[in-house]
Image (tube, rainbow, N blue to C red):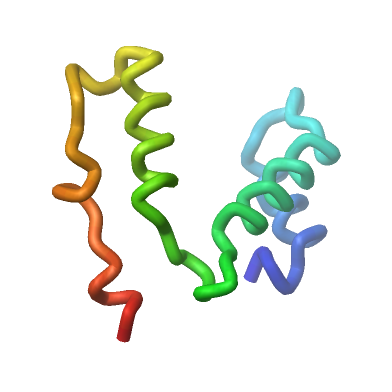
Length: 81
């Protein structure tokens, strides 16, 4: 829905985000998220490199207790179909 109606999606978020929320920032975040979610392989496709980058960032901010083998926690087997 947000991909087809980005302005309306931003307005819906702003309705619940509080008075300090900024529409331009919300639109930037939406556009960024939509771009990140899409790939030539289709929406939602993810790579080992993306998962590793996420794990690295989470470790940097101490949200993960240690190293994670990202190949053990994600799969594309359902996306390949």
